[in-house]
Length: 146
Image (cartoon, rainbow, N blue to C red):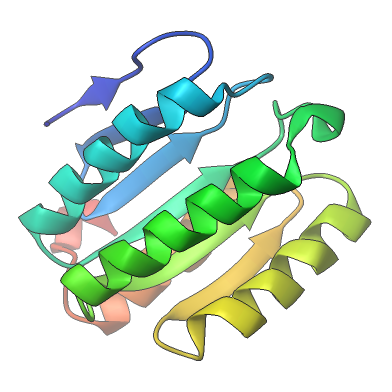
């Protein structure tokens, strides 16, 4: 996978055009059947090498993001972390609601045990700058990507 991939309106969009910076945008209403394909896309970019992700949750309708979907995504991402240890340098999440950002921070703190840097932002600009800085500190960005 190389470029911008969206399987349908119910699957997250994965944009690897700026790899090792990967942008992921969640749909308004994700469907469980699309999660498997999304996780395959994640496996593809993890296999390319070390990277940072910026996960945009702004479109997500909070009332439809079920506990089952959150659990399935977390378990699958943990599995990817075991398959590709140290491949994820940093993960930034974007959502305008402070309560959502706090929940994401707590979830990340519980789930990832400090394996990679995480932070939550209200808008994409600061999230992208933060992710690029993490990649730069890891020596993964060329001067024209900074």
